[in-house]
Image 1 (tube, rainbow, N blue to C red):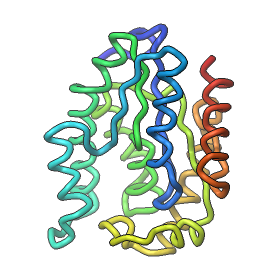
Image 2: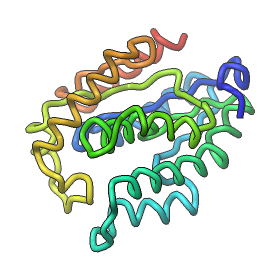
Image 3: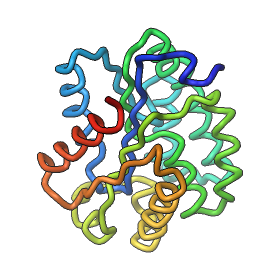
Image 4: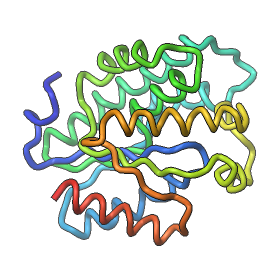
Length: 212
């Protein structure tokens, strides 16, 4: 699979990332609506998910906590879901010139299973290069929030990853900030402590500034 810039001179690929409770998923729909209002064709997706195979894998990864998963098994399941997502949704959308907005992508694996988990982040990154076929986002919007504040926002039953506790969330935040510092040309840190409307304004300003 060819690199993104050669596939799509006008299309853009945006990823929203952040620790659980950061509010990133709630920002996908407003961002998509705004981009469509700007005249862009937009495809929204979530990773893992957005395909039949991805949705089935997502259920195992997040909601079938009675099924034990070794760290490498967990990582490879995420990669399998992502490979299908790229093949069936992301690559075709970019090739036809659409913008893609994804709720999570490869950076999540590098942080969750790498920096905060049991695997070498560089191993996760290398496997991710195979799963994505080299398709990387133009912009990663990292919604940054103190883990204690993020925990306070989660008033629902927790999934497999969310239930790993506050220390895990602290490692997640540190891992995300490390990734952002290593690739400032790709990452934009968004202060997620504000209300949803204000965070949305920050996101739109970042997209307009970075991808205009």
